[in-house]
Image (spheres, rainbow, N blue to C red):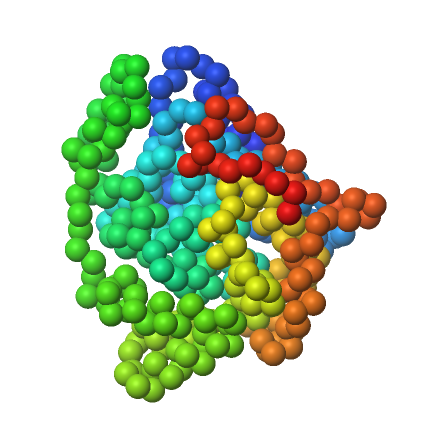
Length: 358
């Protein structure tokens, strides 16, 4: 997903919303992915060359697209038949209907890139049961289609072999009530697959997730996980600890916001999607000039040596003041501006709350 793609998709959403002949909007990918995320290579090149405003332009357009998707007046159906990561999640999970399949692979891997879960992730992750959102956002854990359905990230599960028939039925829409029409068809195709034996959404694992990821700081989360591993060794716990320890220390603390009385993902529970996107935009503005984002993308995407040199290197070196800087309002005198979201009308209160000055 690059700037051209985002801009074009935004244009389509705007034009289709005004077209009375368009009843519903179906989004799907080509090949093995719905969308594997944003194309960070050109963004990193712009930052390295000192053209940070060009990189910011990508995020501004992407977040505006996410906002339109979340507040769209027509039925949006996302068919997640394949990889759904990062920006791909933002381009699908804000819609009314999200269809997972046995091929679905979902993740928010940003902390491994020296970044944080964005594209409205603080909105949709904060609404997952218990502290599962903190687990998914901090570790970059991969979920399959059954897990997405179980936790609520997906609204329906349809085997990939039945997708063509599903699309044919959906495209026959002629009802004056497209929501009911789509819901009826999707419910007819919907299945409830069993979770795998080692699923992260098993009841016994969820108990551990809540005990550990409810902690106030990242350090406490890791130490609690380590105690759990001693008491009852489990591969899921070991993998979770490894994921946290290889991620950017600053990104982990920013994502959880352990330096404040409220935490980034948890803060989203009290805010509308517009407020979450405005706050995330402030964070990405500050994050663009941090060394970790450039270094993480270099290590994972560009050079692929998987050996990032984080600054700071350890969690205890990430101070409260460092984290606080990511949440402050933009200094317009220095050329920084908050995200300006376009006005939207006739929005249900369940979708978007009033955008207040943070």
